[in-house]
Each structure stands twice: as structure tokens, then as C-alpha cells.
Length: 366
Image 1 (cartoon, helix red, strand yellow):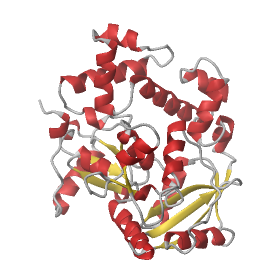
Image 2 (cartoon, rainbow, N blue to C red):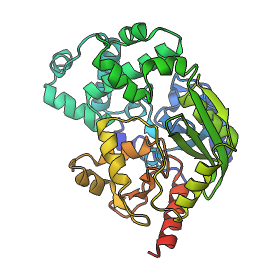
Image 3 (cartoon, rainbow, N blue to C red):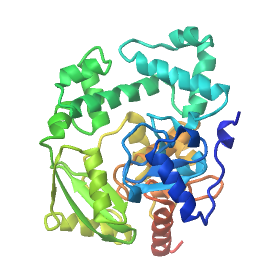
């Protein structure tokens, strides 16, 4: 059996078109025999999956391939919570974590404690949690929470009432849960449901030093800043996050924000405070707030950020917070790099991260 670190080998720089075509056919057919040979990443969602992932197939132009899961994560992608690519074909530890995930998913309407999991899988609660976190990077409790939120969002998209969606997703009350899910959704559950039906979101697309750029905003402020190679790809990414929202392109009305962001990227308006309308967990808020304090033209390591927010052992969680940043540049996650000197990953591609850092260093004279 192969361990996690040996599941995939590094993707060659000059990967052939034949190999990519072969892998794309495997993705289209959900070929489980190819699990462990490569993973595919989807730029519009920021997620990487194994070939047999049961989720809806993405558009080919939004897909890139990696032979190593580590390479996908360094490029800024996060593991799919549906197919769990880190657990594909792995060792006994990976199989244990996979079984725990299935158990949690089947018991979302029950309080699944560490004690209960330990008894079910004949492991000490401490050992089970440590094993689970070493494989997936989160605790069983956090995994259960993410599953409930995902199911809740799915129920809302299906048109269920907020109350029904809450209880069907495994929540047993609607008071504190309502507040928590609001922060996860980026708006109130009812707004997400209609929210998806009626929430007005304006957006604009334009050229930038990083390619085509999209800025989207609610009435309260900017809710998304994205980069891609085409407007079609940008609009698809916006649809994925706000699938039923009333999205309206407003190039003229948002022209000032677009110009302001471009000036900020080029170091011309360093003290510009853009109004943001984003929600986050308490940990994400701490990370993102610190990132905004990193001076223009400077960088910090993931470990340095973790230490600065008082969580020295949470460098991987810091990397995840950077990867889930919805407003590129406004929250400068590109200024976080590896302690070893490597550039690290970036949700919008390592090449764009390098370009941003080069622009800032040149303007700052460093």
C-alpha cells in the first residue's frame, strides 16, 4: 500500500497533451481505477478531486491536473470534501479516516462525540482525533460541521424552507445555528435561499496585470474579487458561489472601484480602504486582519502569520484561510509565502502570485 506522500508523483513541466486527454477521459467517466494516479483541480471552485469524484463534471477549460496532491495544495487548491482525495488508496490510517468520514456523514443528525467515535472504531479518542487531523487537517467535529453546512446549503438551493433545511442537515436548534450558518454562507440563510433568488449582486470585469479581473459587490460592499483568463470563466465562478442571486453586470457603476483596485495593485493608493461585505469564521478573521497589516512589498511565512495571531501550530490552517480568501488583493494573501523560501500556493495560480509580488517589490524599491 502507498502512503499519502507516495500516492502521486510530481507532474512534469512538459506534460503531454495525450496524457492530459487520457486523464480528462478518466475524469469524464469517473474511472476509479485512476484514483491515486493524479488529481484534477477546478479553477472556478478552488477544489481538487480524485477522478472518481461523484460531483458534477466541470468544464474542460476550468480543469488542470496534478500528479501530487501536495502540488495541487501549493497551487492554492483545497481537497474536495465529497471524494476526499487525500484518502484515495492509502494506508490503514487513511482507510480509518475514510471510514470515520462515512460514519460522520451518516449520523449528522446525532451528536457524534470523540468518545463515541473512539468506541465505534476501537481507538482512543485522542489517537483517533490526532490521526484524523493528520490526514485531513481538521478535527472530526470540524468535518461534521462542514458536512452540515454543505447539506444545509444544498437544501436551501433546493428551495426548502430555512427551518426544514436546518433540521434536515442535522442541526437541532435554529437560534445560535442561524448565526453560525449566516457567517458560513456570507449572508443570512433566508437571504441565501431567496439568495440566492433575490439578493442583488453587481459585478464588473476588466483587464488587470493578472489577466481578466472580476469585482462583485452587494449593497454593503465588495463580496468577491477574482482572476481568470476570460469573462466567461469569471462569471461561472460567481454563479457557483451565488447560484440564484440576481447578478447584474455594471461596468459603468463600478468603474471607480475597478480603477481604485488597479491603483492599489500598482502601489499608487496604499491607504485605500475598500468596503468589504464578507463573512468568516473567527480564525479566518484573525488571519485576514493580520494579512492586511503586512506592508506593501513585504512578505510573511505561513508560520510567521500563525505565530503573530497566537496560534504557532496552525500554519496549515493559515494556508487554508489564505486559500479561501474571497477578495484577492483587498486581503493580500499573496504576501504569505513558505518558510523555506518557496512562493507557496495561491488560489488564482502561482504565476499570478509571482506577478503581484514582483509589482509590489518593484514599486516599494525592495
